[in-house]
Image 1 (spheres, rainbow, N blue to C red):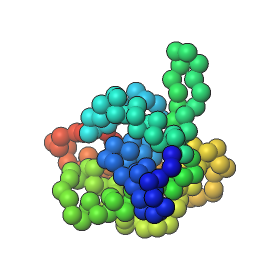
Image 2 (image 1 turned 90 degrees about the horizontal axis):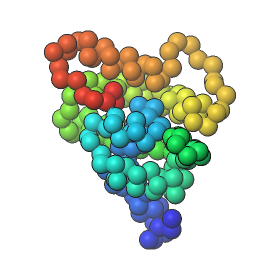
Image 3 (image 1 turned 135 degrees about the horizontal axis):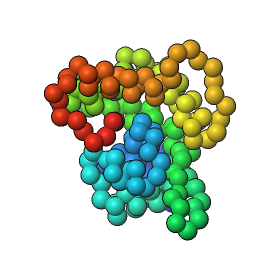
Image 4 (image 1 turned 90 degrees about the vertical axis):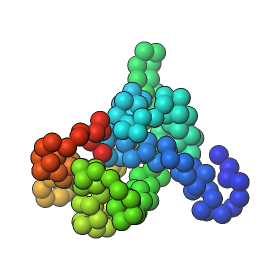
Length: 172
C-alpha cells in the first residue's frame, strides 16, 4: 500500500484515519477479539460485516495485523504485528482527548481513566503484554495483575458501582 505522498502524517492517516480501523484495533487490543465473528458481534458501534471484512483486509495489507491460515471450515485468527502494537499510544492519546472533550458512559470511560492515571509506564507494560499474546514474546516478570486484568477490573468495579446502568454489548 503506497501512500499518496511522502508525508508521514498522510501515510499514517491513510491506514488508520477512518473510524472503523481504529475501532477494530481497539477491540483486538483491549477486547482480545481475534476472530471475525467476535469482532462483528462484539462491536458496540455495530460495524457491518462488509465493512469489517474490508478493514481487516486493509489492516493486514498495511502490516498492522496478520491473518492466520485457516483450513476450510475453520476460523482465521488475527494477530497484531509490532506495528499494530505501536498503535496503542495513538489510541491512548485519542482516548485521552475523548475523556476531556466528549461525553460517554462511566463504565466505558473507566479504563481510559485508569490508563491516564497509571501513565506511560502502564502503556509500555500493556504493549509488552500484547507482544506476549500476539507475537509469542516471552513474558516479562511483574508483580500483581497484568494491565489487561487491571483494565477489566476497573470496568467491573464501575459496573458494580452503578448497578442500574445500561450495559453495553462490549466490555471495552
